[in-house]
Image 1: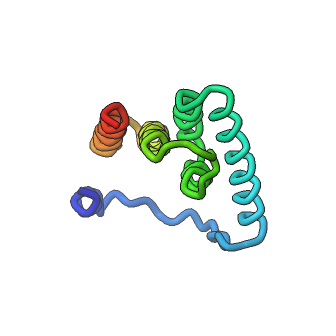
Image 2: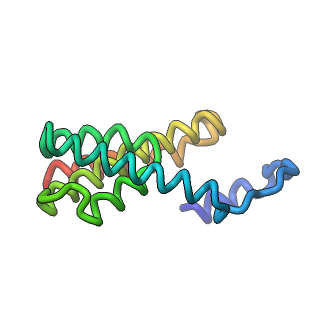
Length: 137
């Protein structure tokens, strides 16, 4: 789908902005990611202790509107203690679904409704499928 959409819009590409890309491996990016990881791990543990799986799922929905990588890594490394694997899987599906909704909002904000409609439709469908899969788990 991405290749078809790229070929269809090939003639409408705008000129480069002239902004030089930054190195994604610089130290400040690593420090920010490390801080996000620690904060997310603490928040996830706190939510699990005080609210159980429901708290982790609610946190997953909120975190999905930011960066889900630290959250997923925290769950994968056992950051929630004795949380069952199906509960962690549900939380990841919820985080991914809310992150897809955020990406759809970005698409609309940057490209407008008309240009972003195919992408928004696909992202919303993915979000709905993720929520449906989480409900089945």
